[in-house]
Amino acid sequence: MAGYTLRTDGGARGNPGPAAAGFVIEAGDGSVVRSGGRYLGETTNNVAEYEALIWGLETAIDHGVRRLKVCADSELVVRQVNGVYKVKHPNMKPLHAKVTALLRRFERIEVCHVRRSDNTLADTLANEAMDTRSEIGDGVGSGWGATQGALFD
Image (cartoon, helix red, strand yellow):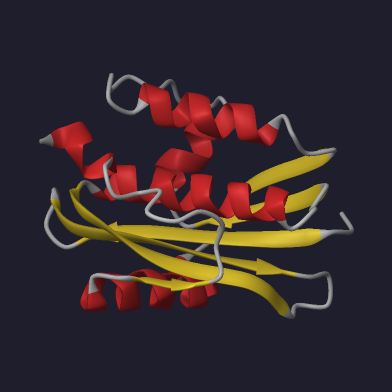
């Protein structure tokens, strides 16, 4: 599929614990066109994974991307987004619904699972944001993820 690739990663130290989201958008030639990392506060790993995907999708839309391949290292999120697994936790349903709505805005979309070793830049950005408790990069929005940790408070 010609177009762009979105790589996303979220993580929490402890579960729940301090968490962050990271994403990278690559052009067809592999060059990075947008990227970011964002500290999310205290939340779970699964929430952080969804937050990374949402932020990456919103930034891809902002960048004008119409065809997108999403690569994420969260097997749970990928399988939920692709309809293989049901979303059972009530706090995860709004995040899944947001992803579903964003995916509809693309002309062509593919969501696939990758190994963590194939997702190192998104992981690095999430960890840097977690370490510095800040937002880095050029993702869309400002302060977008600051309240998401409240889902599990």
